[in-house]
Image 1: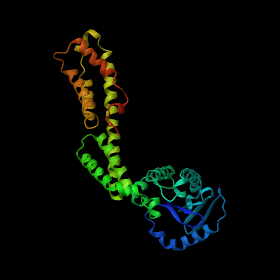
Image 2: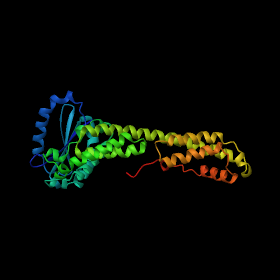
Image 3: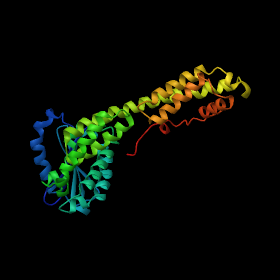
Image 4: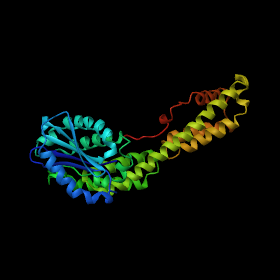
Length: 323
């Protein structure tokens, strides 16, 4: 299990960056005093080998130290000893990301946008190594993970300070819209905006709250897409069977009750997931299959053609807004 990731300035020992991936380490806390003392002593005596991973251990834990000489940074990973091989696979990938964002560690002031990209890439590569970290930990422990470089150095973007009130006002408006919005896809977009602003404000409470909401909404959308796919498949299969049993001249006299039932269910599932126009379109198409008063054979034939040619890509029916 991965516990901590640190980035230190190789010469001064200044802490640039820190991430905590597990909070449930109380059983190990008695080791950390001597552990960090040994760690500091070990790092200070390292050679500038840019390719080797050095490891020291204490109890069931290890610290893997990787010197990135090009930018004078020490990458330190603290994990359980049993994960040593997985850490060795992970470290070069982390080095590549760190090197791509080396300007973050070479200048006095950093842009919040640049750090957010860096932090996201670090999270993503660690999530990909599932053997050392449950992906849900990055969500449940996000409060610990949202530490930033300017926090570690005692810095905070002047631009963000000046814009903080505007960001809070903007978020209040979006939160209000979120609470009133009925369309689930629109709620997804609004939730993402709230998370984006909360991240910029470093508001852990809001971030955690709406990250949970985002997870629930995403799950709801995925479940609904499965249902929509089922009903659409039924519509197409039943319609194909009906068309094979009647000719064009008797089409309007055909029995399409089962097609109607599944198309009606399809349209009902679109409510709150699609635009009103899309929902009403398929609701009315379904209705015309059984309520044919005033519909000519030619018009009915066109209705059947439109249903037959319905797009099989469920995403094409959903209303994703303009996010």
